[in-house]
Image (tube, rainbow, N blue to C red; front, side):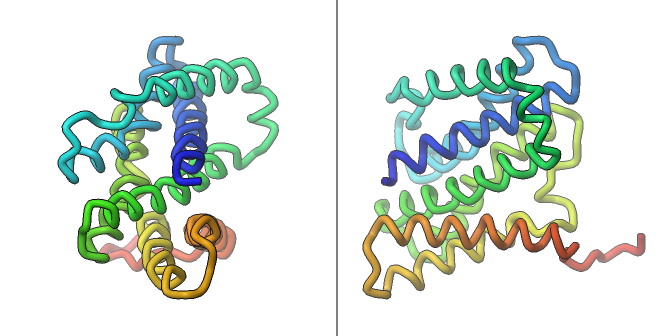
Length: 200
């Protein structure tokens, strides 16, 4: 289940990267680069921080193939994806939900403190999007007032709470990921935002 979630997160972030790159009218090489850094940026930071000498996508070509396939399919079926008006938001939200639980679990396996595990999960989920937005000349979502990193933190907290309950391991992944996804969706739907220090 852990591996499947990692792959699904890679797919979701690849597609979100493609959509941003297409909106910026990039060429095929630019689209591929943006999709790749969005998909593996957070995981790369995560692996470096926990001291893995070779990051996951360098030792497992499946991730590279998944990014390539997702990019090609997203470009081919762009019109179908664009039909979903919230497609970018949807794929980005799924991505942060999946990558949060992957990052938290990696932290647990590394023997880290729960707070550090939650921080690791949040960075895993958000950093790829940060790189994507910076390269596309956008202010990263995580630095705006939107509920983004906060949703990841809540998902990480939920992960540790659920682990203490008599719930099967795979369900812990799913429920914690859904907490992130639903928090983000509800925040956008009801226009919930973090307070700003500056007047609009």
